[in-house]
Image (cartoon, rainbow over all chains, first blue to last red; front, side, top):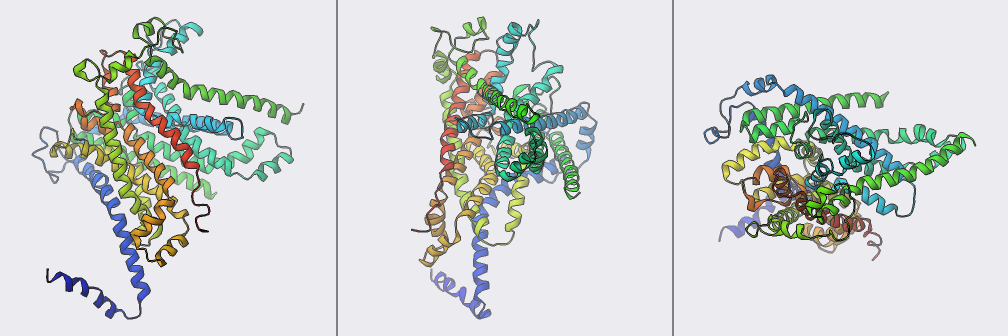
Length: 319
Length: 288
């Protein structure tokens, strides 16, 4: 008790005597310290719950770990290339990766095209526009479990409305098991992806459309450009950078997606994407090493895709 | 008629058609969910194509069954709602407590590494959550945290923090520095400025972020599945619905009632939040 009071009082004194007349720097340093202190909790949580796990996954990918032997292995167990080797040569892995690519490209392209059509349609003012715009965002904000469940029931061969109407109005002979046969399952999942995530593209594109200066279109109209020509030569070039950005964001997110595919098909009927496969290895086979190895492969493939994309896109923009 | 005229007229009609089409496609699944949740399963099997409830079929027994506790022969959704609500509220509150000072620092204060923070967050945001899930699964298994809602809250905080900080930061940047400076001249400290000046001005944006955090936590599925699957008394609504839907024992109409219960809070919050976001609060703040 007797030592704390002088301690606290002393600390500013040497600083002041060391740097006479350099108060702005001290203020700056105080600001810097306050900044670090305020941002520290955020960084701490992100580091502890995200940063460390990422590093740990990489380490696990090079270890022989199963859930049963988990208690014996430490963080710095014996390192081995076994998992990676095993993963790359297991039958089905290449298929899974290919499915993931198809699913990501299809889902991304679908959601952007649908989102673009939606944005163009509600661009101009009309009665009830706010309500329409809000309704269009619903698929994106609603819980994924409820949405996948509704789709499952709608597409159900026995009690689903789609097959009932298909038989009644479109003359289908047999109910179509959309989510459980190989020929339709992946397409159905991609359609779900486009349906659920078009609002994301819609929001970005609508914001960009509203920022396009009216004079540009007006000038084109005066020059005799028809609506489709104005879209092709005026609006689309203005939208291209945003479309490219949404493209890369949606591709990354779809590539990593687990919930949608797992809930719709459980990864059966040729829809197994890498995330679902990792989950199966983790829980059903409790092979943590192999799961981690596949997760690392997923992350690396994703990085490569994004790098290629940025390269290509960056080069295009300079030209 | 020239091409311009033809295009203008046909596009005008096409546009109405497209808007109507979009309304049907986005709202139909929600309507279908609602209709199925109030129909008895026997009637659904006889007439699966109906989009409205025939008079006299209407029932709320599905809701009663889904909400009743398991010991009373129901599906125990009341417990799930409590779990989801607790987790989502705790995650939202804690995220805000951590994110507000962080966002303020990133938007206002010059410190070492300030620029890198945003890039770091974007990277974190886009990283596959399944990669993070593996070691968390391992750690939680080892630490006995699997099956605990606290662990889940921690994960949700980390998942929502990057976007929360980003959104709040953007808003803080629009608040005039002069307001804060006048508070500083009046003798307010750093935390006093945040609490008395920045935070009240940023209230709409804080509410928006809170809504976002709540929705993410309420809707989340993967981590709930990984951590809580062995503990039915701790299931969230999402998890409970998906696990019950896997079996054949529970009628689909009862689960549809569960879906409505899962979706309704989010839809209500979303429509409430839409309006809140549009309110501009900073206008005229500097004059007074």
